[in-house]
Length: 177
Image (cartoon, rainbow, N blue to C red; front, side, top):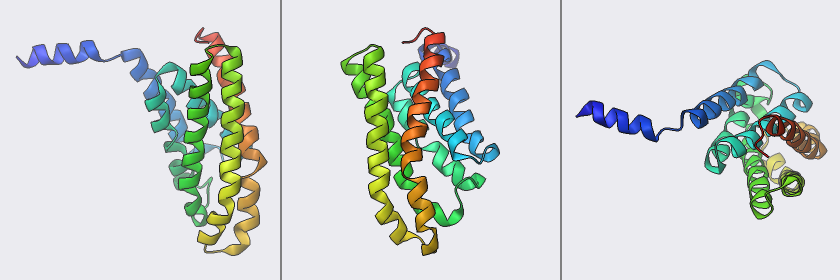
């Protein structure tokens, strides 16, 4: 009886999707421990969100969008005093994923992909930029406000678009777009 249940369960598991999810989520979780430069880590992490979206699905991409901020905090890329920024960064990542998913869903083409990346990147940037006021009120050290404001401004847009470009190249190579 238990062998039948195991076989039926394994038949329902998409091993390729699971492999993509575990591999990309693992990179997203580990990268902040090794690379402490936002302009390097950001594009790679944003590319991973988009890759997971296209290779595994929106629910998985939304789950992965929550991981890197926590790991950046744990790994030191994001100093502990900036912990109040983590929920805002997570929401920004979710906005990017949903933007790409929505526009590509409306127009499954190169144009839809790039519209999604651009709109998602703009919305992520606007959300984080507007969140700076809330975040700085939560910070213990108010002298960090300028650094937080800079981190939550144009680099968010730039790294999201760069991540879209990396994802586009990878997805073209994988013949998924």
